[in-house]
Image (cartoon, rainbow, N blue to C red; front, side, top):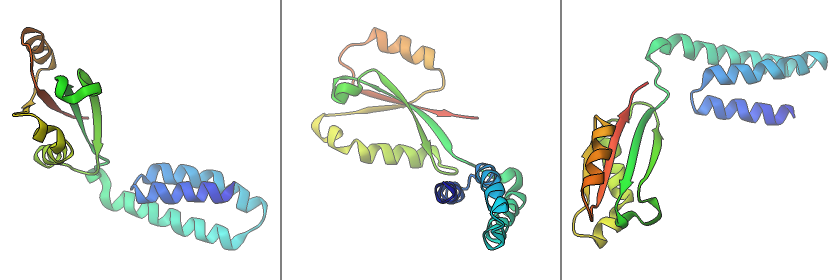
Length: 147
């Protein structure tokens, strides 16, 4: 069990989720203390020190991800027609960067059809009202979700 917890802590460290990493180690520490495994305790405290050092250094400037709400509308999207998804991207991902990434993913669909319209939306209600008034559309909307 300790091995699994330590693997989880390492994954949290990779993801720069230091708060979660420290919570996992709070479960590991009593186990090592009960077994008087001082060598492992030292390793855990070194990792915790690094974890808290990262939190102090980055302070309020940590960005755990950018979120985008994407809606797919039109027969061009098949099963995804009229579906909406929230995409999480690492760190500070800019809207243009994410748009390009989506366009590359959807390249096959774009090649099949004449034109795929991509809209950046600020008012989702207006967008959905607009969609109800038109027929035969090929549309994907993108909405930047702020925390």
